[in-house]
Image (cartoon, rainbow, N blue to C red; front, side, top):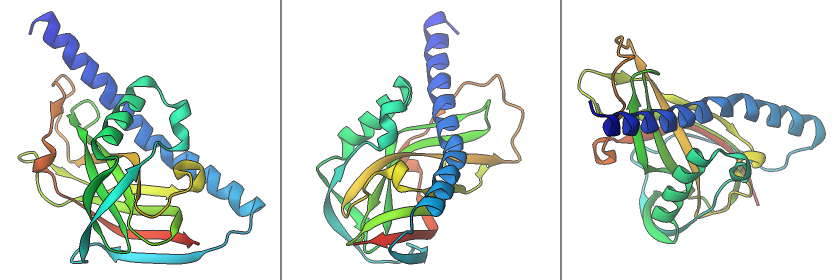
Length: 213
């Protein structure tokens, strides 16, 4: 491998690793946010649970994408990925699920052998008619984007208002999805592999949130 390709591979590895850690660290941060809100504020709103978006009606909708409050504290690599996805989807019409949340995959999607994981950027869209708080869900890869590899669900922890800001109807925010490989092989020295998002179908399920007027 020549130096140019090696540096390119190293750059992708660094970005993928950064996004992987960003996705993993969200859990502890959101848990702290939730505990603080529970202690200090009496939450208002209706608890909503949706088993799955599978088979639900969809419609074309003009969406607005905003960067989350955490954007002020993100490293340059993660912020660049968020900005790219915002540019791709902001003020565009997209097919979203009625009265639920929808995942639109972003352009960054790599398999990172060192972490045995598939890391993808995405836009999370509020397709309901209310503001959403304390959102959690599971993301599942429905097909096999890589031959012979199976990935477990990404259990996205509770996204509080501190994470999403005021999450309004027909609004999208960038997020990171991390799918861990089941029974991985030892491929620590292998290069990251870019995955075509057209080869991936993601389903979300076990959706829970608080609907706030």
